[in-house]
Length: 217
Ligand SMILES: N[C@@H](CCC(=O)N[C@@H](CS)C(=O)NCC(=O)O)C(=O)O
Figure 1 (spheres, protein in one colour):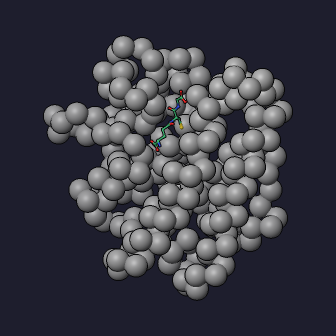
Figure 2 (spheres, helix red, strand yellow):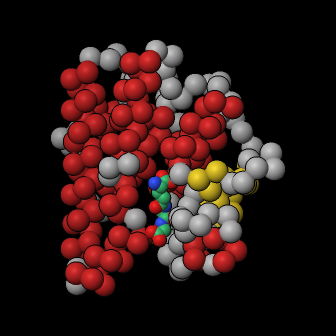
């Protein structure tokens, strides 16, 4: 069975969780306490020397896979059905682009090591760090909203009528944005897609607050 090294709060692990659920792959999740520094334990550094989650042990004897987007691509190549990417090259580039707006250009600005450094090096307090996170998420979500509004791709999800790689990246950022007081009022396409995700247990069950170890409130 595959083993996902994750953490309840990790949006990058959440992406992999959703992809595994969409593809119907059984796995076990092991929590790495990234808020308590467990990502720096030698035992975890042996799994992922970058000291971040997720990492995926695939069960084939190879070293653990790392970086959520690379893991999603590996899942797509090894378990092609249902597809997380459209069939046509232009569509695949679009979906990968949407995913990267969120996973490569937005989410990395909010991770624990960045939030910690904003405080320790630049003296930002909790409110300033929350505002920082909210602003970068608003910019990423705004860019995705604009693309969906203007690209003329039909369908209920980010690209067509089935959920895919862009949607699972979007859902995590939407959750983080709302958690920090953001609203989707000016983002109607994203609000529609987020509602589809909320209604789909393969997405909803991957949410941070539904993971073991998450705070009760
Ligand atoms: N680009 C990486 C992001 C990995 C990452 O930064 N993960 C966060 C949790 S979402 C983490 O483990 N952070 C630990 C830290 O910042 O110290 C991916 O998509 O896998």
